[in-house]
Length: 203
Image 1 (cartoon, rainbow, N blue to C red):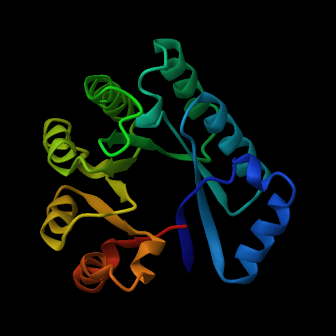
Image 2: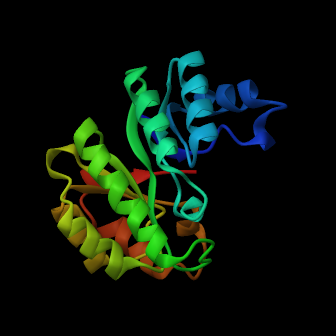
């Protein structure tokens, strides 16, 4: 079975032909898709899409890019989305993005940690966004272990040693389309050498 572990089917770009896109994925052998929220609106829409399509599931959360603009009520609203349906299968995407720095780093860290605590309370796996913040993400996750809930390191961009460290902590490693690039030797090594049962793919 093929599972797309990370899609954003809520995006406006898909509005004209979303049903056709889902049908093409099914025809290509993709039997499950997890569509990911990045704020309240996209989390709501992710669940709407999941409820309307048998093979689609939702994850909800607030992306680090939105760390400067979210409010406490936003997290509470997303938590209520979780409790409304068993088609919500994860909390994310959450994490740190120190590449674009759309939000101050300290605010990203606060948001990340608050969502880690809530995902623990709700017993949901987490979906991690980690861009140019490997050390910081790793240290925070050591303070907030996922335990048996587990989680996914989305769009993995580290080396094999980091991947194996995350796996020992209970995570799956999701390999993005960049693995097809000629110069993507590091991610190719990761994809080839991590345990197959811990390898996921995404669009």
